[in-house]
Image 1 (spheres, helix red, strand yellow):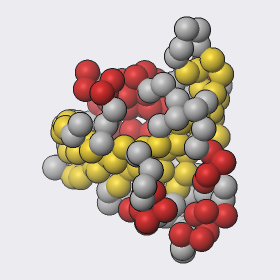
Image 2: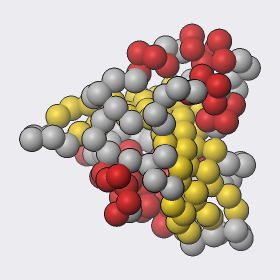
Image 3: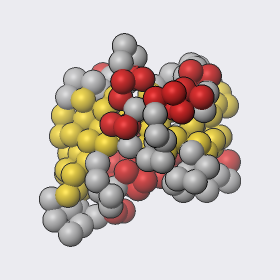
Image 4: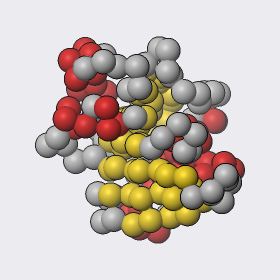
Length: 158
């Protein structure tokens, strides 16, 4: 399923992310693509909040220099279960081999959600995987367009 959303502020982008995160079940891979300042990190802050990262005391920030941050998550099921959010920043990676060496395959589990900023830099490594692509673009100083491709059915209510 593909759809588009518009955000009019950074706070609204975070709220869209919160609604997305609240719908995730675990096992999802979400790649974010867009130029600097397009809202990728704001959206991830919201997704992490929707998955309960704030309740665990996790502070979400861009892992530009460490490449991967891990946050605790609460994934829905018959009861909420503890899981992990892996927030990967591929901006400084120079090759697909570097991406694979950070242990990407190990992060892709049913009890985790993987969020990749600058996913276009590692897109060949995602080929064959069922991943959600979110492309963000500037519409104005504060307004952003979010084009979501390959979204699972539960995200249609976002």
